[in-house]
Image 1: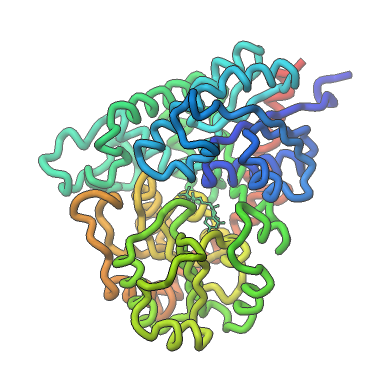
Image 2: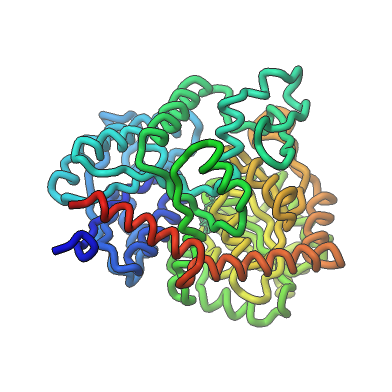
Length: 475
Ligand code: UDP
């Protein structure tokens, strides 16, 4: 049998955080839909989230045991970084995942995959794959722009030449005059060394790996896709936006955790609104705001006069005491807004025609999901590379306006954003000429995104290149 007819077997190994698992499974769905034998490896407590997101796709799940809490020092039952809520626990969690190496290698021995697509936070996976003579491809779920900014900052350290946390500097060598400040750089001061060491390992293993899959499409960021490959010399395939692998309402509704709202109720509410008249607010899978901040958001939303769906990461049992006096009757009771407490079916909501804007923390998945929905965005970054992604929306593709945050959440000097900037930013993306222009640009990008993943599109073709490459190696 010639190589071209041989069945390729690809093993996915997502990092156990919701924001990493979800795009990895979306990507696995792309592989399965193109007829590739696809297996996802995870630990038992992550299976429900993964199997919901897989839905009817032809993907096998294999489990390996998560190390015990005696071995790791993590609380019992903590197998997903989203339940390791303090920064100390996150570091403990990252260390614990190193112990997954032996179980993964044992599984590879049994499964004989032709390639391992492992998350960036498993730098050791490159060596594991090499043991079995197969390529390791990195999936970090990000696009080219934030990856290029990170690489230039890491290489040229422009932050060492400024005298304060707030002095702006341009990112050296990067096309497009991108200006940032030291207080927006991805590092947690307390864990600087541990985390910086991990990021160095991640970078080294990426360079040693077979290449990187970007969750992006060429037309979104051609300058940075070229820079990444030609100037930074990395091998990469752009196969995104992977969220588009969820095609119908059921797939979109089942993606991720079980929603805290009945999907039909949610769709009914959206159906009752005019096109582009609802702003959707969600700050990712992990951010929980203080009561003071939630109150300012509520006041800002009310003052903006817009319909809204607002995702609040507070338990259903907690009282809504932070809501302004009379808000429930005035706003929620009048059908002007919906608060979802817990997990929202984000892609299902964003893709509804009555949603006309998105207030986002700028995780890359959310950014791309907003792009695919063709909506302007308010950027409200929190940490990690989110400030870079926010710049991408406001300065590069020009479909975003900033709410004005300048520093990581939890850092000194980050007071709650007041109601006035919330109101102003929401209005700017929802009504008026500027909103219309941004919406037109966003809709054009959304059309390009859909074309990219269709037969003959740029992401579709790059998938073919990756598969050809893997086939030529498998024998
Ligand atoms: N998400 C969702 N419902 C929620 C919160 C998040 O479906 O209530 C999804 C969202 O669609 C995205 C992912 O979870 O695919 C979050 O990834 P992102 O990179 O935006 O942010 P992170 O959570 O990693 O900070």
